[in-house]
Image (tube, rainbow, N blue to C red; front, side, top):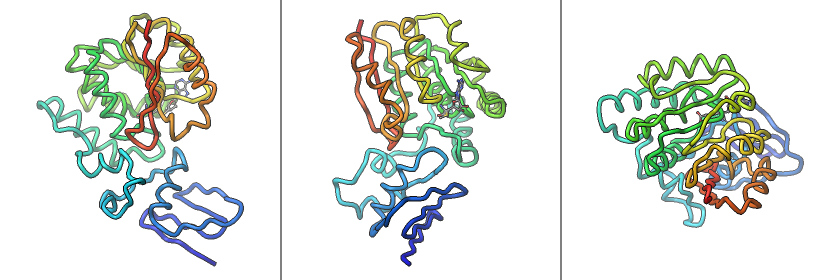
Length: 270
Ligand SMILES: C[S@@+](CC[C@H](N)C(=O)[O-])C[C@H]1O[C@@H](n2cnc3c(N)ncnc32)[C@H](O)[C@@H]1O
């Protein structure tokens, strides 16, 4: 029986794939003759399957398979160079979160974070709203931007354990004054928010995206952005959301794969 071992600790035989403690069964036969195919397959497995392609292998790939994430990992540091001692502390905590807390957390990847930070700084965002804090990793990226713009982040999380982790991370990074963490069901809590909002990050449950959009869009300023995370990696769960934004004549959208998960970036035009 064909058996396939990889450095990621994953094995494949003719009808079963296992990764960490999760397992799925695939009917039929899977042939994976190269590491490229292996990586592409693993990248589709979704949250909970933390899988990092080996950047050293980039040179051996055919160019049509190279992704922005591959190139980023070859040329960029994982986190940006700190601009001052305060950023140094934030980035130290981000490093630790990536090394020790990321598994199963559903954090954005550093490539997505870089883009979010760049967008927030470019828009000179003052008011950012996030749905789905988890342990606060994406929030840290926004904090890097908001220190520069003088803005604030309001982030929402329902899971008590993750709330506790996020609070601890915000404290040790020294960003508590930049972040308000709202505990509980974001569908209810966002009803109390006030505009104008410069950027919304949708990164809680995908089924809720249309409701979040409906409630928050009136508060987003003209020229503001709604960023929906995982728009490539979990596109199959987002049809209703994609339909809603593309049918709205006031919105303009681009799909960007800074990482394999992708971001759907929508601008409120009027
Ligand atoms: C993908 S994770 C967020 C990752 C985070 N943005 C990051 O990149 O570090 C999604 C989070 O949304 C939270 N969530 C799901 N439904 C929610 C709801 N109705 N209200 C608030 N948070 C919710 C989950 O508990 C989970 O921690």
